[in-house]
Every structure is written in structure tokens, then in C-alpha cells.
Amino acid sequence: MSKIPDYIELMKPRLIPLLLLVAIASMVVAKGEALGIRPLVEMGVLGFIGLGGSAALNNYFDRDIDSKMDRTACRPIPSGRVPPKNALLFGLVLIGVSIILTASLLNPLTAFIIGLGAFLYVWFYTLKLKRNTPSAVVWGGLAGSIPALGGWAAVSRTGWLTPLFIFLVVFFWQPSHFWSLALLVKQDYGRAGVPVLPVLEEESKVVSNAILYNVLVLPFTYLLFITGGLHPFYLYSITVLNLFLMVFSVVAYFVKKRNVYRSNYRFSLAYMFMFLLALIVGKLV
Image (tube, rainbow, N blue to C red; front, side, top):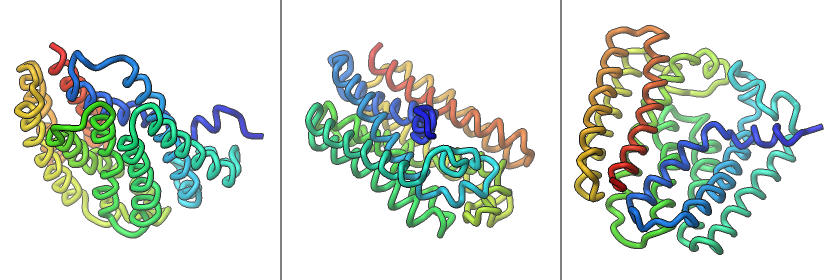
């Protein structure tokens, strides 16, 4: 019999905080000190529900390949802890509740963006791209970046250039971050028949592509300083972060070892958290 923790696990709760922080950072940059607690709480709760629903549907549609991968075989559906039909219904209900309550408590535009994010993640990435093209991780990043727009829409109707830049930072950051992980578990992806770049190409080409996408991140982090009305603290912080991002990338190119890829993956995750925190602090100080 399924238990509550099994359904919580379906929501991939470890992935949600970063996505929520993207939305929250966008909200803070939009309103600064004028931002109230209520929209933050509403976005946090409703965003968690919507993101969790999308993750549950991803678990449902990926249950066959998850069962073939060591890293994912213990997830609730392939391990038999949650029946597939229950996961499907759970995900649909969560997304529906999130959209309806967001339209009521925040505004219809934010609700639309949450629905669009779910569509992009479940239909566009999970069903159409993931099993068919190594570019899935690139274009699938649209779903992971959209909280930047949702957060802005929750509290503002103007100045859309700034959330677009946040969106693009997250969008171009995601491929390199994912490939660092995929290099560590490429045998899993190969066994499941998922055509990720590390399965199809030599490591040098994968790392070269990762460096390219990290380079594409850089200009938008600086454009945010111009359009976002941020304190110089942000400029100093992002310059240091960008320097380390490129150092880790270049080291991975010349030292192709698992421990280097693992370090790259961990720093990449830390980079995004620190970038978003720098945005928040840079707006409030």
C-alpha cells in the first residue's frame, strides 16, 4: 500500500527548491523592498504544488526507462510503491489545483505560465524530446527556466527584459549542469536507450559543448546588473562566480576524470544557488 512519503517522493522535492528560488529571485528583483510576504508565500506553496505535479507526471511517463537505470530504479513507480494510475491522477490533480488557485490568489497570467511550464516539461521534454534527440536537455530547459517569468508575472506587469535575462541565465546554465551528471551515469542512460550527448559523443565533445553553454551564461548575468537596478555587491559576486564557473569548465576539458565531473556538477549547482542569492541581496541592500 502506498504511503504519503511515496507520493511526496513522486514530486521530486529535492529539485523544487532551486526552481522556486528562481521565481522568488525574480519577484524580489521586480519589487525590491516593496515585495510583501503574502505573494512570496503564495508563490512558494502554489509553485511547489505545480512543480510537484509536473514531476509526478514525468515519473509516470518515464516509469519504463526508470526501471532500467540503477539511479532511478528505486523511484516509487518502478519499485512498485505507487501504482502508475495513482501517480497519473496525483500529478494531474496537483497541476490543476496549482493553476486554479494561482489564477484566484495571484493572477491569470501567472497561472498560465505555471500551466505552460507543466506542458513544456511533461509533453515537450518528457514525451517528445527525451527519447528522441540529444538536444532534449537544451530545449527541455525551457521548462526549468520559466519560473523566472512566473515569479515576475506574480508581482509585475512591466519591465520584462529583466526576467527574460534571468530566464536566459537559467536556460543556458542547464545543459552544462546536466551533462556533468550524465557523464557520471552515461551507462545508465545507454542501458535505458536515452540518447543523451555523453552516450553518443566522446567526452571531449561533451565538455566542449558544456563550456560553450557556460560562456553563453556570462553576458546575461552582467546585463542583469544594468536592467535590474542592482547594488554593486551583485556585480562583484557574479564576477567571482563566473570566474570559478569557467575555471571548473576548463579543468574538466583537460582533466577528464569522474571526480572532476562530479566536482563540476556540484559547483554548477552551487553556482546557480549563489547567483540567485546574489540577485536577491543585490536588490535589497
